[in-house]
Length: 553
Ligand SMILES: Cc1ncc(COP(=O)(O)O)c(C=O)c1O
Image (tube, rainbow, N blue to C red; front, top):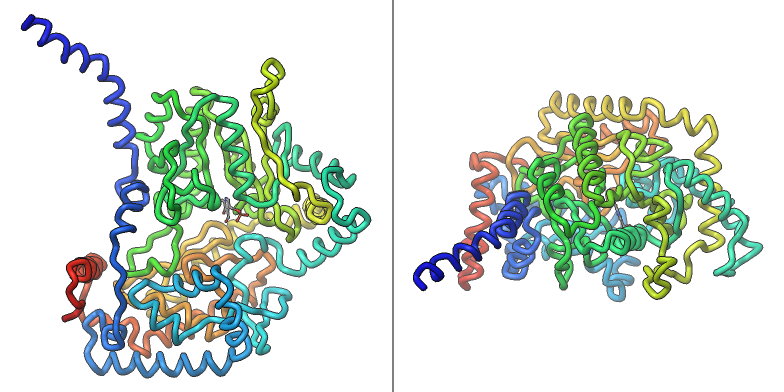
């Protein structure tokens, strides 16, 4: 009996050992940052108490002396008055629309760190309306022109005029059918043919958004592998669907998603050893900030935002992923919704020289119309099993293959194969790297603490000196005529029609905005605080608020 008592737990342990080991392996393959621990990030997000700076704290939360705080205050008030006057019409319509548009309320609130947000969103409002676009510029309702650095969330690869043409052509092509759905316009056949050539995949499915395309790719991977889990990497955006958003922002955390560290041997070990993984989702944009959250300015609480792109290292990582996925029968999905058609005519597969099992495209592909596309191997794209007629993988969608969208896509793909467009891709990496280098050299010469990191024409601005006020830069940039999306300086998206002269004009505006930031005291660094000190002082504020104490008191 004593022997049995001794042996049973030991035997149970022996049986459980591989499971425990796999579990440990999984834990160790998570990135140590919060981005790698989505559930914990989600719990913490729920606990984080809201608080806001009062006027005095707003201008001196870094301990700046009265003179600096006063300079900041005066500049802020001048900027508020300037915005109110210069952007009057755009702001008036924005205020009207905001009441009934939750999206505007959200973006208005999340442009800057939450402690500053009430004062900023109340007094330094940003207009959401524009009346026209041409070349590389946008014109608002008051007639102000801005260099467009928003890139229409990545749709605008070739410049707005290109898309105006493809949209008009697409509409003309689709017009004969109007809203007819379920039967196809003939251009669908040529779109399929072109997409097969471009992606090197057997089959295609059409959807209305990138989110839907990713949903369908993952669903098919699960159906065909009969496994449940998907693997994604920290911070990677794949749309707003439940299973690809395990962290804050999604009320129902998925149970079948593993978020593993990007570019990590430990993650490869997990892929090698587990049997429950259906697919690995890769958004190649993460090459710019592996394991980092999307760089939004509302997260700019200090200057620790980092970005940097190493093409060789990322290519090697994709190759390793390819190898292990092949070995283990895991479906490798490249989510090229953002980068497809920007990096190369054949997208990220061509650019990195790695073939995926399935690829999702979207954004720019329908020439300016809403789109999501999945391309994949025949055995993965099939939605039924001939031997089990009731075992289906259902995917429909009223507007899939809409005649106007398909027309826009035909116009886009037709242009893409012209020699001029093929030539346009040449040397883009070098061009944008040189521009980023020039940007950084000019900032350094001017003693300004901003630096650009880029992947091709996608940029992130980082800050070399610790500061709590980097988020103010986005307002000065707008003031100097640069249009940014709501994420601010975290993501600048250049269209490829930016000439050298256009780029120089943008550069000049950055210098002007940086000089304003400096002159108005936002980059005062007299306290000698490091980024770590800043984060510590924010943590103290959070704890004080959680304990019901007044901050700063
Ligand atoms: C890589 C990636 N996948 C999916 C999506 C979702 O696409 P959509 O916004 O069209 O749903 C996006 C959107 O930004 C994306 O960047």
